[in-house]
Length: 370
Ligand code: HEM
Image (tube, rainbow, N blue to C red):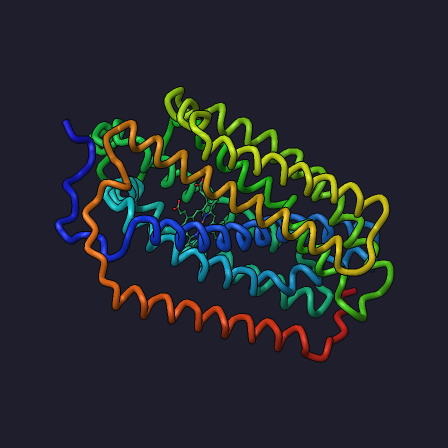
């Protein structure tokens, strides 16, 4: 029996490889934003509580600097989440729509949860501006953000398990359940959430380069940036091993056969080790100039891109084992639309680059939160 709903009679309007390439690019950007949001929130909360307890202005200023940027980071999380969602739906709709319906109430609740967490980020930012406590507000935002991540992990793993869909639907057809009993959920969720703290180290390195910061704040951001990079990238390597180990035998075998996925896994491990190594260097010796930030961000980008591709491999191997081959779908390419799309994409990227350059050239404002 075919476990998947019937194929959509409308063929794909562009080649599978093009959708996959765009999906990889946009999902990597979404994950970078998610990492900065989760990691930034965790660190800002810790520093806010510690800063108040010790009456330490360096901690409070560092926390305020991060808090002030979180609502902007959230805009990137959302806007860079939409494109990969569209590409995933086009490529894997038969699996993704089914799992989405099964957890429907949770899935639709993401919109409300986003509004709630976004509001609390703004409240945090306003309170930081007037040197008020932000820790408790931040904890509420963090709890909601972690829940959103958990719902995403549930859906992205449930879409790989067509064998449980019918029984889940019979048990409760109202979309009220999450995907219980799947051993891959917890490692995947922890990988993304705890790994975020390490990736945020890269953001701290760049934040520390902001002109007109007090010297102790610069040093603090660099020391913590290096430490969290080293410690939480090491944690993420262990969690990555757990993610792979928790996969069914057939998926693990698929990941280690041929040259493509083993090479990506090797790139992922090597770049993770490099990032952690640079983290140790920064926390012990500090840095000057652009070399260290450039190296660590290049290694970090390669690390996240290879992770996105391995993750995609887990999906393709899992689904292929159950009769869904993403590459075997009818394609009737509408080249006119594809060209217009690519032109719009290039234009949008150009506008974004221009905006970044405007921000970089803007007169720096002095930020004090304590
Ligand atoms: C606070 C907000 C958010 C958090 C914390 C978050 C977190 C995550 C996490 C942890 C994953 C990986 C799940 C896994 O595979 O284990 C994920 C995947 C994804 N997220 Fe987000 N997300 C957020 C908001 C959004 C929004 C608003 C959108 C789109 C409108 C979005 C689109 C996606 C897509 C499309 C994927 C996976 C795509 C794929 O597998 O092909 N996310 N997100």
